[in-house]
Length: 411
Image (tube, rainbow, N blue to C red):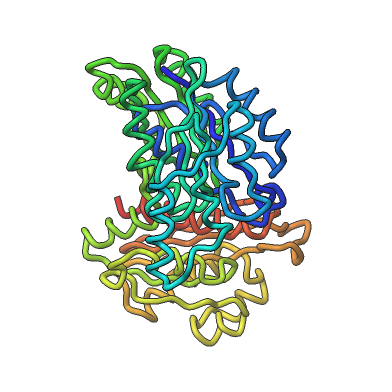
């Protein structure tokens, strides 16, 4: 299996002015085609930094892919640095220039001298022509290694990777079969998951690897397998069959599933309607539900009862209950879940009440204390959670946990 390194060039990446989406897309696309990305490196628009990065990458990888720094302005120095690095000289490329003329003509513009220079390419490279922009790419080969330089503009780079670079890589370096399968869990931390599946994980064959990918409110388990085995997919399926019974109480989906989509499918299948009463989550659960196309088949609406007056006036929560226990308590969460079902006439409901912080907590009711109610049929369940101290994470974790509680009651 060959190793590939990606180098992104540009001060704008290092100072956070733009987010490097190129390397993420390239890594995914290469992986889908059977190639392993060894490392991703970002460097500034500095000749020495680029040369140093190339020297280091050459030690680790057989293919080095470079994006950025091919524009027409003086700060774009990648082409000139590569020309020096490969002891080359610039020559005028007629095909590249005709492409530049075509693009300028389509915009009723005249090619400037600066843009004309973009058609000058190192004589030791194979040009990679750019149908979407004025900067051609460059393919170099040296000592059995391949170096490819592409523009930093994402849609230009993607087309060149798909149309030219990956097909040529496949001709030179036969790809290796790579399979990933992800199991999505909720309601258990990664360390507890690790303890539960430790023996299974230790018994994995050498060509398989498990990765723990925690996110707010959930943990993704990605099983990866590499190798040209004819039955590799079946091997992965067998391992998953052995894994799932160990953590069946925590699995809510697989691969690209989202909890709101899983819940939506269940509601649609069972022909049930949902209403939500949100306090501490401020409408975030409703946002997740309505992000799913077709949710109007099952979602009726919600009340954001952030202030106690809304709980009293819109949900008819018992005033004495609020005075005695406060809004953040089990009885209020239960009444909210029941009240919203009655108000909107739905089959099921969710309620949330808690302290998202950063202020408002007490010794008895700290920041992160949340009560979630779920009402299905003749059952209304409320659970208490302590979800940390970060406001954004509390809201997200509450939403994910609430939806998973509903999923469990529906099944």
